[in-house]
Image (cartoon, rainbow, N blue to C red):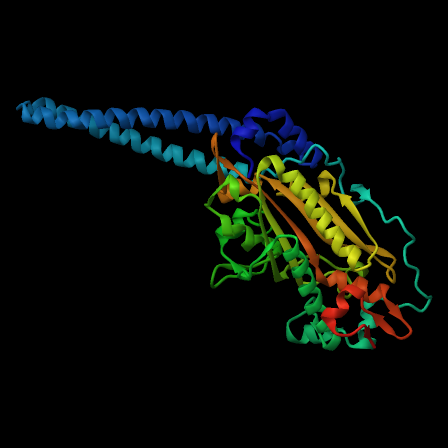
Length: 425
């Protein structure tokens, strides 16, 4: 959530940022409504403080008047105090209503894009900041997509997932299951070597947790909801891991805070259909290793570059063709100030598949989290960042397709010590 002080001091930048995001022009008046509501809030608070101060002063005088035997004056004063109580009560209600309306309007406003974010409407307008330099892999004419290879080598079973749960819940089997487990271990080990502390968080979160990282009220339609218990299945480990530091004040010496977690992730992906979502291209449950950082505002963009380099290193070690994109305003997530997407090339499908997003949220999440750090200027909001390192479903699809051979599916060299085999046959 944007800070009101930031909106007040940077009104034109906020409006320009909303334009870059393609935020509807007819709704940009919310910025001025927020500022007006904040002025009203401050005015009501000042008036209430005056009333409460006067009431307290008069209340103290009543006792003195009774002691002096001035019962009539004390009674009149008591009536005046009662009148002030009634006025204060109305002011408190007006203040509460104003604060609620102010919060409601603030929740509509997305994060303001970093100046480097390009304008654009869709993913076609994203900027390629690093393209694959070598030739893209070319397979034999009889090469198969991963869902057909899975049928041949018994890697995963989509129909069994439908039987057990429903569409979009694959069951990995045999060497396919071992490949999943090996990738998870590899990603976690690499994160550990990069200085990230591993945590195992809950897979269900409460409403406050989902609100604090921006999943609510923006993405409730994409999350699975356990109504009886009022809990949400996590769409990413970012949600519970970042909330470890909700309502926490950390020391400047604690920076950087670096955490990693493996979790299954659950997303409804409502409305997703078509050939581009076949097989593992889009599923409702998938495994992912997440990296999360809490940073000093002065170094958060250096940290973002370090996270991008970390993800890039993983793809290089897996020997997968990749490219890096800077998301345009229209494709940027609601909470993000700047996001880099990683895509790997699927040789059999002849298309790029997104496998990671690495983002800097600046203070947008920490304002909701009340996550601050102590500084010479007092308590300040920290910056949060996160990234997929990596999401497995599409990584597996690319590994299966790009490494198919007449003998079977070759396992990338870096994974062979984890899998214990070099070929799925």
